[in-house]
Image 1 (tube, rainbow, N blue to C red):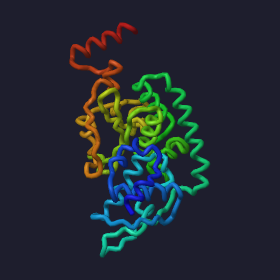
Image 2 (spheres, rainbow, N blue to C red; image 1 turned 90 degrees about the vertical axis):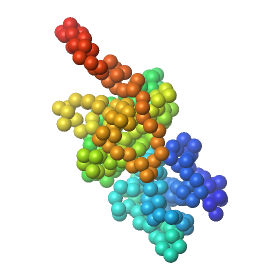
Image 3 (cartoon, one colour; image 1 turned 180 degrees about the vertical axis):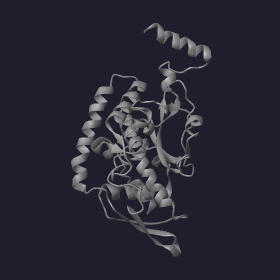
Image 4 (tube, rainbow, N blue to C red; image 1 turned 120 degrees about the horizontal axis):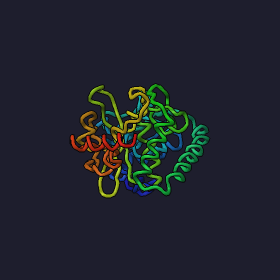
Length: 289
């Protein structure tokens, strides 16, 4: 049964799905069944697979969410959106009951609008280098979307591109979707904020041969920065971002981010390396006034 499900894999561009393409056997069979069911708006999705842990199906749904930004009609955020029906004596997941954020007609009306917005952005960034493409999309999202985790679509590209209100997962999934359409390597990762002890999401992307961490969230709530974009987490290393955020390591096997060349402040020559460098930059600014 599993071999047949895997051979009939309907997920488009499957090899480009960072997490899903690494799955095997029953995990892969589950995400194929779930993806097809979600895209067809099935309220009950038959599974009939056994798992060693009852947590695993929810983890796999989260991977679908991170890897498939086009699935914005459903989210794992919120305990009422999915319920699992088990035969506990066999550790068998029989089916899932799904509650959707919108109906199929609403999805079919909104998807072309989102695609048009993405295509317009792709046309704008086409002649740019990869750093400038990333910066353009970053600025577009930050300038056009405000932080709000109390809306229904806060975790999706629909919230970002249609409602213009979202939270960290919505920002990350939208950034991933657009940059991947632009031919860049970009994934969404999940974890939690050490300070607030709450869930968080950000991106990892590849520029040239190095990986960088990217987090838009701080700049979408600029009231704390007197209205200024800070680019604090624009292409930073693991060491930097993990001072504030911890990766959900049990779920993810992701690249280490060690690149520094394309950090916003280094690449734009706004980084100060020492006191002498600081003085040189200040003098250069003062000489222009």
